[in-house]
Length: 414
Image (cartoon, rainbow, N blue to C red; front, side, top):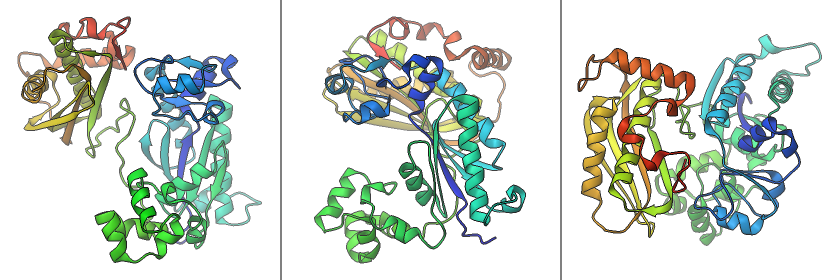
């Protein structure tokens, strides 16, 4: 088996949140479904079924615009705890087939089948590629049969090729790009298909006459550096199908899923207010709860943070970030005062707030330090155990149980 064979897979759960809602309520199958909130509310679409995607509804679109495009759709608020449970069930199924899994987000993961050909081979497999493709189809069928969740998988020699292939395989398909055919596969695709190229980079490339990955692959290095800067060389190599065959170590995009012991990336939570807020008690309560949640996640992950960052967005959408390096910690007793000080220093305008966020970064492995600020370690362990079993909201600190965090308060959303 050659190290460069097509063995890196990107498994993407199709419209994951919508699919889970349909498992829980089969009457939603075939209906246009939008997860994220009610039409016209403050906030954005979290997930959209294929029925409404045809109307222009996409994740990230405002609920107001979604309501205009698809007023007939079924709108659901979402339930992140339930989605997390199904995401874990998906990982349990996939682990039966693949020895190496890297979680990219709640609905996406990368699999590495390198070196597994002989172990997975069955009579009738034409070659090693056929073995891997059949195995991947078995994963797709198992997820559908056992969990009722559709998935699409791309198989390639690198993460980028596999990622692009998984998108083209939708819905509920498998697409393998054989070694040696990467450049041919990528060439006709628009540059936006390549992971990391967003609308701004797309516009810059269009100005110099580059619209496809084939054109990008053949462009001169100096010209590309003027457009893409430091990313020019790796993106150009990727467009040629020369990206490294390495799973890497991604930070999960979904807030409630953290790899145990993972020190790459950051741990963050944000809340957007349904109505712009200026009440000091409400803001303090929100910052307390956000601090509490990221610290809880850090302890579950088994890490401590040396950097605390506050994110603040005014009603006019001006967004600020302020950070501070501290002694490594994973307790809210230490993080919350820092967050409040950052907030007091950052809040220089009387304008109401639209969003608040707290992040922990510069992570290191957890080292318990006994009693911190008078809170007994055993008590904190009991609290975390209860939350792991019954959910984070089963226990809250007194300063975080104000109106801003009541489930029936119309001013906030998860």
